[in-house]
Length: 484
Image (cartoon, rainbow, N blue to C red; front, side, top):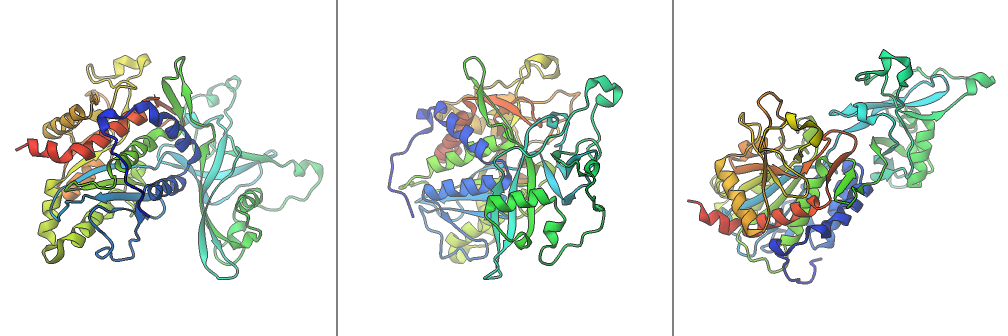
């Protein structure tokens, strides 16, 4: 149901510090991509956004002044609002980010034989996870579980996370010499310990744990997983019949809560900052800009994708039809008899995309690794990401465009570019911009320790992101009109 009308909070009047604690609470409570999407969906509904289904036609559901969202796979989400004066062919102001993060995913058969009294868990790295920063951390487990209802026969999806650390990947003490140094083998050395079992030395019978397991049929899946883990997951969900667990997608995560850091509490230390940070800022900006009585002539869109860290190739990733099909369906709903490729192409040409992914903050201990005058700092603002080899969408026009937005929003822009002798990363901007032919820029919030199990950003950075992104939505039309 729509919320009651409220007065617009302009970007220039926003206080970044107002978003610090909400970000800390959000990132601590939602450790997996599935929990993140569920949280954002609930937040959107609280602010009057209506949930859509991709399986339905939207033509009779969308209205001018309406606010909507939908999920794909439970791990990706797109939200949008339609201005009160929108007409098909007008532009779309889009912010795209990703919500997946480096993690360790449970293998299809995660049971492993007990070794020297330790129970272990079969885990595979997602992207660059299980690197050295994963050693000696208290790890939890969570994700989604597919459970069959005994009465209806329907298979339901339930979210779960255990409320205590269940695993740890122990280092080898330096006293053992060379084997304790360097990057450990992720298959043989980075196996989480989840419990103790010394039954072999107390005369108990030890079953052969290498016998094959076949998937399919009641109770079979549970037999392929560590019994203690199955019981813990089932107990957390209130499931008594272990055989009703059809399958699951679980992952490991650092259990330490996000917290303020520094003598003046100027920084945030947290896991999974890349990129729940820009996602949080983008979605809160859309909510702030999409108030009742919005008389803009555009559509405002936030796309939060999965699988960015591994190439974005799946259907919930940015290389799929996830975003383009959304714009197509909106144009179709409002285009009437004129809807078609021409009107869609006009929408893309009139639109603008911010690819919002975190970038590197300057590290004071490695100043020589940064390009001079391209060193983003924490608690200053969004950083434009440039690249001479087109790994980013940023160009002269898009930089000038976002600079005008920043000026109107009382925000500061920074700039980052990698040195000529270093390797540049990539994100969702080029693939989305090229697929739609839309003007675009890559710009994100800075962080220290990218791809570590825990990273650092500024305590004001979540709010600084909300501030600029809100200004982008609010001032898009007037800034666009300034360029010929």
